[in-house]
Image 1: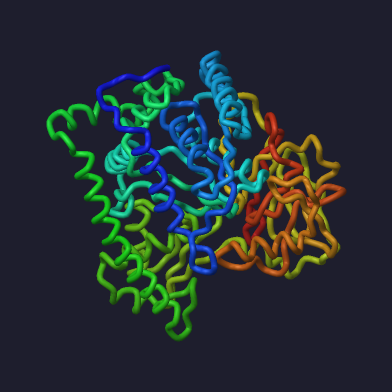
Image 2: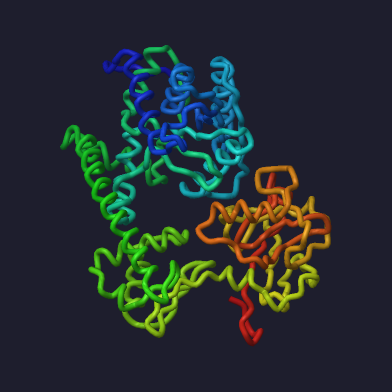
Length: 489
């Protein structure tokens, strides 16, 4: 696909924009000596579209100046038949022409997938590739146009002021890799012009025209009439985002100070505050503190959830916020309760005890105060993977050495960390998780194991041995047993 138009700045202008964008993104993350870490390998997300093609071409041209070793990754969702295959072939050819190693992922179809599900699957494939290839950075081709679309998407869906700031130039992932977005101040027209200047074609994804996707609707139906009526509105929204971002930085510092103050009061800690101290704060600050508290515990933040918690903090009672966190207000205390503490502190269970896991079915593990529900995976079932710290997992048990058991960890236990084929000591695995977690895992840990190694530590992480390569075989869910054994949460 070739591009044409009257807008044709010199190629050097685009390269300067990209170089500045990399510098801005990298400045978010400093090396210990205080300098931006440049000498590293980056993985460019390469769809074959104009933005990512311009990004990859420019990054390859700037690699020596930036001190970056460049790789690329193409994720084929297999949703558009021959068109998807043609995009993949284009990416292979251009990567080869540029002398850039390319990894390709094929994602299995799972019925009609939402925009969010497709994005999560794509990001997961990029993160896994970066981890396997030792890439410090994952580089994405989001432009200023994408930033404006994000502004309207979040505005229409519902968000707080912080959500209107849009995407950050850089963001650290749990795996340790850093997402970089060097094109956030670059217009899509600049990418097209650069491709014209260097004589480079790109792919055209016909699904980008489909109005069933919200972003496409915003791009094709909402923004054009606004642009016609208010020329240059994109720059004014960008300026507004910068002002909001400065305000948010001020609020964030104040929120963190207040959370530290709440946790430092007599009888309090990070997960326990006094209702009286919290109740003295202005409501606008209280809302932000609760939003921060929810987000830091990986609980989805919404206006309704924040208001529910805010009302509860001024009265008494309890609410379940996620599979991991509950909130209880009683006796003048606001308590954030981590359910994993009950899962992992089965002090009454003997270290040597174990319970055979039923496949499929629900296994009552009374010594550990829990049950494991194992559901067989059904063809055509929608596929959405829980996070590593969830109390559920989707697995492929074909390689497991059956029978599987529920037990506590043992000296010498081994596990294959997700994304690795090498066995490591479970003790080291838990230690690494402790370093990256907000709170350390308790000393007694319940695991699901086969006859050779640990397969899953509920609430902490999954083994690569049961990682889904094709289709899953089972979904495992940890459930807490009620005190009278009469029901499961």
